[in-house]
Amino acid sequence: MSGFPSILESINDLTKAHIDSLLERAKALKNKEPSRLPLTRKISVATSFLENSTRTKHSFAMAIKNLEGNYIDFNAETSSLKKGESLAQTLLTLNYQGIDICIIRTSESHILSQFKNHPPIKIINGGDGTNQHPTQALLDLFTLNEYFESIGQKPEGKTITIVGDCRHSRVTHSLIDLLPMYGYKVNIAGPEQFLPETELENIGIFENLEQAINESDALYLLRIQTERHASDNDTSSYYHELWGMSLEKLKKQNKLLPLFHPGPANIGVEVSQTLVDSNLWMAHHQVRNSVYMRMAIIEAMINNEATNIGAIYNDLSGEVSDQNS
Ligand code: CP
Image (cartoon, rainbow, N blue to C red):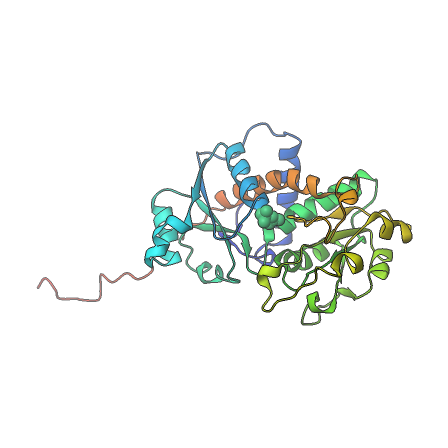
């Protein structure tokens, strides 16, 4: 896709037109139309995951295989990064080896911003610290739209409430940027220490779960991200009772809402086993759709016609004028 970014770090790197095209293409791929893939050559895509993953890494691997590309699982732990090589030089090396895109997951927020002016390789953010997880939000948007259309309703004007550890959630940050572009109202609910530290424009904040359920058309549940907490924040004794979702709580409000979750879910904490085993649980649809959305993202980035990837920026040949005279 012409103009598609070479470094997809954040939802804010995309225009509405880019996102419209991704949604359309993911739908066509899911419906197996057109049968021909638009890639004109064999592509090579690597994943470099410096944090654990099941969904993101493996759905990218499936997407690459479905696009008939080479898949390289770059192992940072056994690479020359451990000998002091910089991330930029590592990515340049992958580029010179013929890899087109590297999908990176890291616990360091904003680490990919440095590459935007001079991309060493094309990069897709697979989740960086607490900052952004753009491909997750895009597949969530696709799945939310699909859900509301499946029940004969328009997505525009629907209210999605994100419940749980929003402060430390990169998915939340991407959803807040993305969903309002498509007419969704986004609310956030959770205990005070998990709410955003700063006020967010047009985002409703709830510290009462019953009220949050009442004002929602869908709930988006989150795991408590203890690995990103600065101090010990043991919520295990009260979280499920106060904030965990159960059939009883939904029935009490007379609202059997669809439940979305980026995964991994901690059953018995943010959600009950009964709900995970029920038809309200949308996470399986999110996982299925993730492959189509990630295929669409890879295609768009491959076809973006960028000419500045891995380029040399300091031409020093004129620095010594008379060296041969
Ligand atoms: N949603 C998500 O990022 O899941 P993984 O950590 O399993 O990739």
